[in-house]
Amino acid sequence: MRGKLSAALLCGRDGGGVNKLGLKIILCITFLFFNLLTGAESPVSEKQKQINNIEYNETLKYKRIFLRKPPYPLIPSHSQLEYDNHGNQTIERDTSSSPARGNSYVYDNELQQFVTQETKWGGSITLTTTHQIGYGSAFGVPTTTTDPNGNKSYFEYDNFGRLIRTSSDTDVGTLTTASYSYDSSFPLSAKTTFVTGTGDPDFVSRTYTDGMGRNIYTVKSASNGNFAITGRLVYDGTGKVVRKGQSSWASSGEIDRFVLHLEEKNPTSFEYDPIGRIKKTILPLAVGETSPVVVTTAYNSAFETTETHSSGTSKRTVKNASGEVLYVEDFASDGNSAKIGFCYDIAGNRIKKSDLNDGTPLSCPQSSVLSPLNTKDVSGRNQTYWSYDAFGKLKAQSDPDLGVSSYNYNAFGDLTSTTNAKGVTTTFTYDGVGRILTKNIPEGNIEYTYDSFSGSENALGRLVRIEDSNQNKTFSYDKLGRVKKKRE
Image (cartoon, rainbow, N blue to C red; front, side):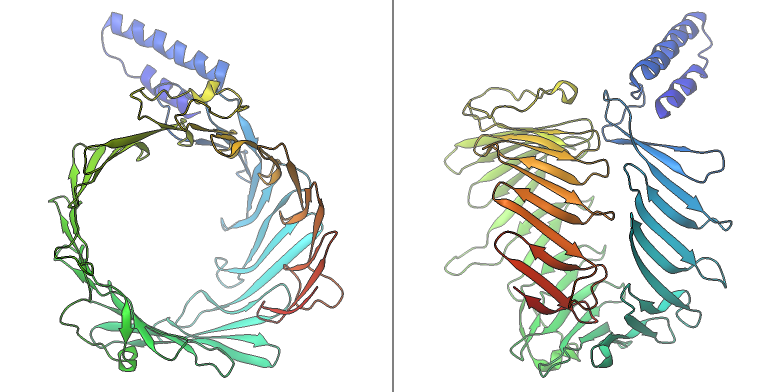
């Protein structure tokens, strides 16, 4: 549709001359016929990426998304969206296959804008989570959340709407799982305490920030009772990091008190060019060395950079306008070099990798005519190929070491089979919400069970059994969703 729109806009621009107008009419007709016959974007509006086209029905109740990678035909991903009278999305339904799967949402009665219930469904499976919304200082955020098993989590906020405590139902009652505190003295800091619920010390961390909200460092408790501090960050006047220290041990007092370190431990320093790009990186001085390693970055063009190490090695990297790496060339200190090149399709998927050390220029195959990957490369140039379907999912790859492998998917995009270089095929099946049910391999089948099984607690939405010809594992969970029992 965008290709046709671009052509139509081009038709509407009158250059004023008879010859120019005639040429434009011819171009318009050519572009429109190109769209009608191939279903591809016109050359004027073609983009170097996968294109989504959305068609809404007359009442704006659902949409169909078409994924297109020219010159492949349109392949629909049927996604239907429904809305209420307030404009809230109430249903997201994927009808790419049967049974359909999706999510539905219910909103609060007061303002009709905050989600109070969300349900994931597919076939006969329904998993519902509910929320109670608060309208106090923390306006519009959940105060209580109930999971599909009926277990609740509670959230408390201070007068500024900041989270200060979370609690959850457990097997021994409702317990605090985490608490949060905030210090307004400079530098600003926030402390998090995760309660272990056992005899072990609680896990504590505090992050200090400057007046701009940028992190300075974080202090964390360690399992042995000590404390660790992340590398301190130092910023210049424009907000760029100019020094970054290494992590190290800290004193216990630093968890509640900011300690001004006169210098960072083994810092890495950065220098920038006038437009904010790193031009020099100075690494910490290594043990036994007399001078630090310095990495200098030269920007040869908008798409080419060269990194030069003080040790004498360097690396040249070339990218395209989309930021995808096309070439990487490494130079050793003795003058030897090695070069590798990459190719991409119009959607940005990498389709080829090749060594270029023999002087042969890189040849990129057209993604539209990429031949089936049936054999591995034996040219000695370490060439790897990839091919994709119209949704950008990997269909096949040819590796000089691993050989050829292929992949297949169902209409929802779930992987249904994979075949390796030895011809061994593994197949997969899924339930209504996309969870794997069986994995079939030559040695036998592996079956997965969810939501309910004899002796399993708090099982809704969770794996409860794995069974194959050699073993049978079952799982039971506590109210926090942690595995409580495992039987083999």
